[in-house]
Length: 160
Image (cartoon, rainbow, N blue to C red; front, side, top):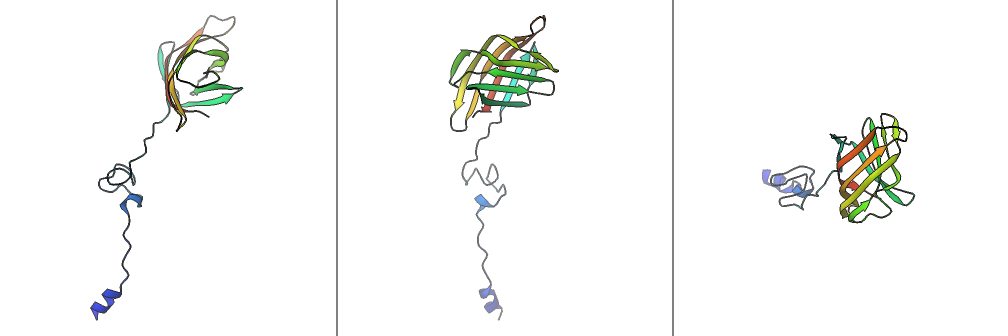
């Protein structure tokens, strides 16, 4: 009688380890790597710079399109920078346009930019991200203080 009941029991469908929502033995991520499809590579956006010689990491960063120009905006709790990368993103080194390039430090606007250079080192047209370097000086008309942005490196910043 036991033989009859056990032969009538439903067989459970095998669960594919590459789609079960867990990191199984041999996988390097959830349902990827090992015997499964390769895991996607994610490169988080980053932007680091030196402001008057002090290293800073900017928590907010993005590239937007404004009046036909690509504007890289970077900010943290007390600083905002806008860097005009020009009207087309392409690999190379270019003088930075002064239009739309500005800085705000603790609510004080630095609207004059000079000696600005930006270099796009790579464009990923599939994931639509840009990486590169830049430098620029910001000043205020009638004031002697200058904000010198040096060694600014941005990586994997999404662009429209």
